[in-house]
Amino acid sequence: MSIAPTFDDVWRMFQENAAQMRETAQRFKETDLKFKETAQQMQETDRKMQETDRKMQETDRQMKETDRKIQETDRIVQEVSKKVGALGSRWGEFVEGLVAPACETIFAERGIPIHKVSRRVKAKLSGGRHMEIDVLVVNTDAVALVEVKSVLTVEAVREHLVRLSEFKDFFLEYANKKVLGAVAGIVIDEDADRFAMNKGLFVLVQSGDTIRIINEREFQPRAW
Image 1 (spheres, one colour):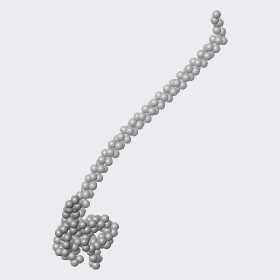
Image 2 (cartoon, one colour):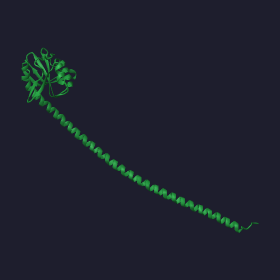
Image 3 (cartoon, rainbow, N blue to C red):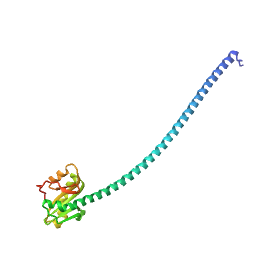
Image 4 (cartoon, rainbow, N blue to C red):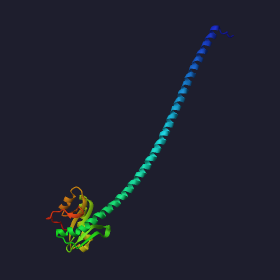
């Protein structure tokens, strides 16, 4: 036989239900707040992703523009290099054209009579060895090898010394002649002139519209 609930029992259950409902309502509110916060975070994330995408697109555009500029710069550098190379070749020809005619008189003034002056004399040997003389000055008992540079450097003098030591290997027809050396330059770099004279070479420089030998009159050239 069940016992009928009393008023206190009903009131107590009512209060417990009310408390549970309040707790559930609070949880709903907290959940709703979290949903709103999550939605806000998702909106912020979406905004950041859109901003990142915009920046990536801008970076991509800048990289393409940089690549275009690099290609354009490379094209300009190649074009300038070509022009400089061509200019260097023409300048060398100009310098040789100035030196070669002068050799007919300046060596004669030093007691070396000249019979023949030749430009760009070349020879080859087996094994791919080759030699080119900018200006070759010849008389009955001697030849002079003139290396012509727009800018005369110590290194250029050293290279010419090697050329002088190997000359008779390439030009057997001059085997019985005395070989002299000379270097010429519009601009003299470092102490290239002093180095050349110390090695027994004539040094030719521009003087106005002509070329002159700057070695002292008592200078004795080295013979190979």
